[in-house]
Length: 62
Length: 312
Image 1 (spheres, one colour):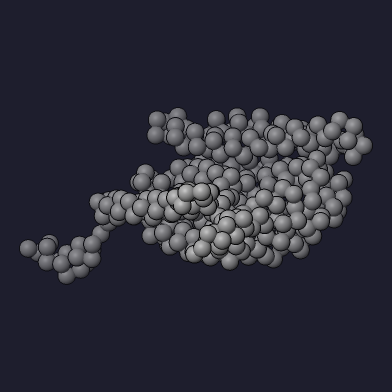
Image 2 (tube, chains in turn yellow, orange; image 1 turned 90 degrees about the horizontal axis):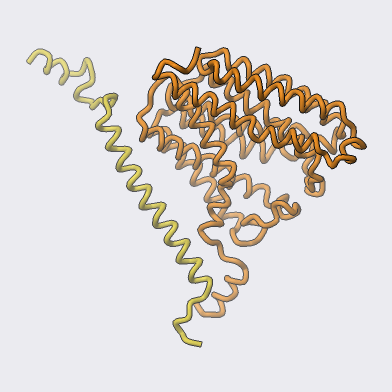
């Protein structure tokens, strides 16, 4: 029996590792796109631009 | 690691990726995804399509997490019953502690991510749903009362309310009625199945209404819940998520469902066994499309609204 012969267990482990890898990679892409959508969305307000803040008042006066 | 240890683990059955997916009960997840999607689309507030996609995904993961916690706690029952003996834990492919870890990790993950993607209320609502299914139903009431199906149905009925909460950030009459539609549907659906499927729940020590109160009582319960269900279905049609299409669908389905429940109530075991539970089987098959078509009609009404066609 050659030493390189693959056991069924190795195939299963490779499948598990690939699956976990794809899930984690997918999660990174998902969060990246979610952040992009949240930042570019109209409802997003940065602290500097919130109504009533010093920066907002200064912008109105200037 | 030696070859000997590898062989031992392989014989014991090491989990594949599919085994961990099976822990999340993907078939239950599909119902969760569909009803949550309808709740989200039917809500009066628009949601960015990508945020809606993420929200549905996190709700589905939350549902899967509660499934994993259920399999962790119920592994002793699953090992006894024929239907569930092949599940990852009783078959030895996944350890109980692994299922618990996966369930807890995905529960926390899904709730936090839903709160971040949509709003805090929907994240907390998802947490409550997981707690309700895993603790109130699975750990507490499932082995204690024959009304377990009714209580379990509540956990399965929350997703459309969560979908609605993703869009609106709260609860309203419409979302409560969508909850009640699934909640009232669950008992007749499962009790009809229990009438013609000789379940081995009894061996597992889980009280089922057919065993604890008898089959005639189960038939009466089916009729009573079907009447309540019809009332809820028509009430839903009178709210902002209803419309002529929904009402037409609800009218046909509820007349058929009530007629089926009435026939079940009039029969006894001798009549049922004579035709191999024909009426009960037909009622169960109808129940499978009942919820789907009601929610599909709500979805159609919501999708037609921008064109001035859906709704009242």
